[in-house]
Image (cartoon, rainbow, N blue to C red; front, side, top):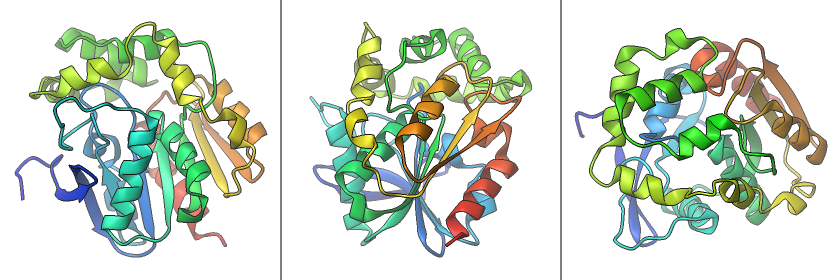
Length: 274
């Protein structure tokens, strides 16, 4: 086991190895992270793990092109690749069906999973989710256009949060150092090139099919989100038949960090009902 908490388990998924966290016991819940620089499943979800691990089996992979999942030379990253990676992970771990939690980019991935493999998904949670078209925000443009420096990372973390005290010097330094790991910035900068509106539209490629999603869906958004606008979740609420929406006030894009206990409580209640 590595001394770095971001590096956990390693398993073959298709042609490459995926780094993933797997803890707790019970019905599996798979957590899909967002697309910020230096992001890992650990950075996105580690505050949730201790609150939920006694009730559920929690699985959180680093998606291809992010974190400590293997980067193959010449690899191409797109939604089809990410969907296949999650299915390959399900199969490698012998998971027939799971609940899915998607954050931002991970929300668009969760929607794609629900559309392409509905039989593998039980319930769906979308947090600050992409997946529908919107004019790119200044915040998202800065996130995807990040070039490594501590000053730039500090600006991003302040864009992510309503309460900037969460953007501590330690977190800024940790996320900056993560973003300059070998290969990290090279793959990150290739994911969403300018004009970055195209990246928003590629995440919204399944919008016509979202109305057919049959799963019970919990949509969560921070009212003051400056990266993904609240309007996206209102659109998803209208499109998905069995959807409910919870909006946190005094909350930016990082609901799971700014309102950890309440966010985990929402998930627990939703997953345990029915």
